[in-house]
Length: 170
Image (tube, rainbow, N blue to C red; front, side, top):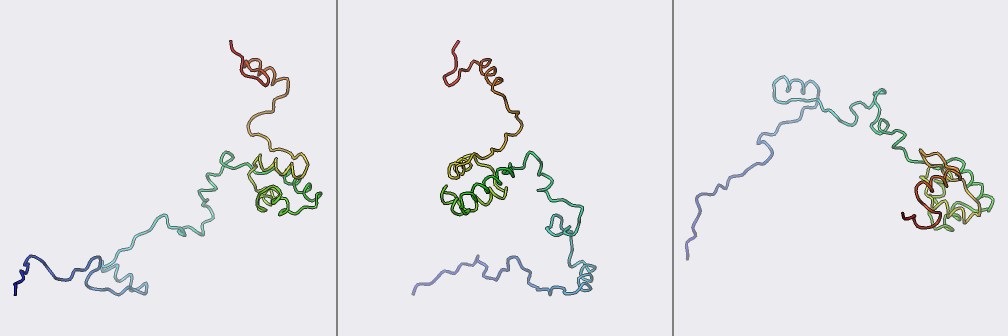
């Protein structure tokens, strides 16, 4: 029989990774915890940024409320639009579900528009107008004042634009 060569450089002893060989019992009372802390066997540290660290503090505000300003808020459907949709739908004796299926939208969308929680979408408003056969009030644009017809013509002439055609060449 052939002899097997045994390597002498390997260590076949057991290795514990991540745990000490002596298992300590966890302290269950405050007295036991404080006695181990005095002996220097354990250390405690304050954790900052823990979820419920200041759960009962009334003076703190959430970051969401701090950051929520007029600029970051989304436009919501105006109450006049939501009332107009609701009244036109009721006049046609339709339910929210009927109107939603007629315009290929979910019933939740119609509910959001009627409750004033939806973010206005022009395409959906046009679909609702066509189906109900009414002209709905449109949400106003932010920041800009409405121009009158006389001002539009003057602005177009000064910009070198023609009505309905390509721009003028000089």
